[in-house]
Structures are given as C-alpha cells and as structure tokens.
Image 1 (cartoon, rainbow, N blue to C red):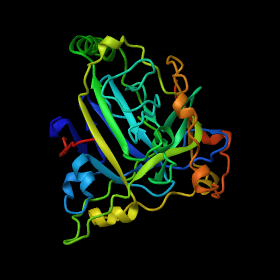
Image 2: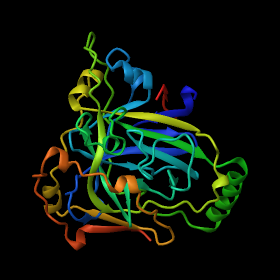
Image 3: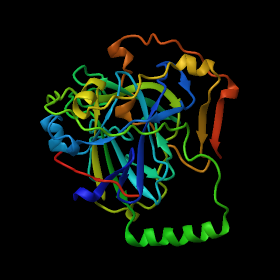
Image 4: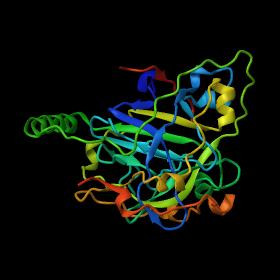
Length: 343
C-alpha cells in the first residue's frame, strides 16, 4: 500500500476509487424503540497520525492512519456524499465487519455481503441489524467488553474504525462511465442536499506543544446504541465486476478529548448536544427510503450485540419524541497523503 492511497481533504477521507468518507457528530438515540435518522451536527476533525509522531502511542504510529476525538457515549455516522464512481467500501469496527458481523477480510464476500455499495449507500449510522434498521454507532472505551469487537470476538485488541475500498474492474468501470455520460446528457442535474444535517466549519490545525508527554494507548471503540430506520443495500452487480484486491485502506483511531489535547494541542469539539432540547426546538429529523434497492438480511453475529447501556448503565438523558412534522423525508483540491501501517 503506497502512502498516497488515502488522503485527507479538510475533514474528508478520500480513498482510491473516488470514495469520500466524513465522520459526522449526531444525537444519541434511546436504546428502546426504533427512531428516524438523527441530524448531523458537524464533522469530527480528522488528523493524520504521522503528523504527531512524538505524542501518539507507538502502536498507533505503527498502524498509521488518522485519528478523531470522540466523547464517551457520543454517537456518529459515516457520510459518503461526494463519492464519485461505483465502489465497494468495507467498514470495520474493531476489525469486525459492520455489515456482516464477520472477521475483517481483505476480500469482498457476497454471502454474506461484507461491504457497502457506493454511491447508492449515502451513509451508515450503525451496525447492520437488518429488516430496514441499523443500531447506532456509539463510542465506548476499550477494556469493558462493551464494543462490538469485544462482544463478537471476546477480545478488544483493535478498537477504532477500519475502511477499505474496492473499485470496479476496467471493463465494468468503462461501461458505467459510458452509461453515466449518456444519463447526464439526458437528465437535469439533481437539486437538494447530498446528505442530512448541516456541517460546521473544520477546526484549524495546531502543532502539539514542545515536550508534550506521549499519550497512553487507552483507545476507544464503537458499541451498539439505539435502533433507527436505515437500510443497508444489497449489491445488484455481478460479483466478478469488482477488483479482487483493495485499492486503499485506512485505520481510524478514536481518541478521547483529553488525549486529543495532549496529542494535537487542539481543543476538541464541544460536548454533544442535548437531544431533548434539539427536539423541543422543532429542529428536523430525517427519513430515507430507496424503493428500488434491496435491504440486506440481519447479520447473525451483530444481532446478539447488547447495547452500551447494558455495560455502562441506564441512559438518563431525557428524550422527547419528534413530531411527525419534524421528520423530513429524503430521496424517493488534493490533501496530504495518509500513511498506512501494520494492522
């Protein structure tokens, strides 16, 4: 894997094949019931591990990749707005596939499907629970057994998020480009947002203070939170259309706010927004449905994952159900390279 395979553009990760991934802050859902899609509350700042060699833990430096700050029990979703061409994207949570629940692999699988199909899949808010739902990504510390990784594998070794992209082979890609060119010539440009929620300005980078202590490799991983209405789409392309090896990959380390300060010298984003206050203010939630797509079946390994509340205690944050009018239906320059390491 060459260093130029993955790049940062602002807070967007760009993987080979035109894949664009942003990590978006959001409201944490209650762990009971099924809910609309929560809003985007700005991007997480993303920084290269290799830019802070003197303050990151040695094992993070060996793995390379990027890092972002996240609070305990903070929720996030992954946005793929801006992905240009068809691509297959694997998403791992502690090297457990968030789609299939299977161990991390450097090959695509169709049975069970272990990847997302982009750009058809506009975002991913959590692990695949099937039947038109996912369970929200929620940050928890390693060592408690609360992560998806800990519950599926019995160990918490990796944490973080892993991304790996695959492109179409040359002939299927050339065919898609021809068809897309004809479609654009005949169809007006679409109007409206490319994702849900509004992004906040990125934080300016700042150098770490001289002589800052090296951070301990405490690390964070992702557990399962509340359920929401979101489909994970099945691939309708022939399996042989896809390349047999990944075009690029990146390890995303999740850092606590104190670690973020020690490593980067920057202030992390403010603490998460109170969800009841957000709803009381009449601000929007979202619903997305693609009638032409087919939802994947539940992943057996992921169905058994318990919510983080079972490990960390009850969720005492107040909840107010959004009114019907608050739920909005959606649809019917290069940056520096990111280093890769051993993981």
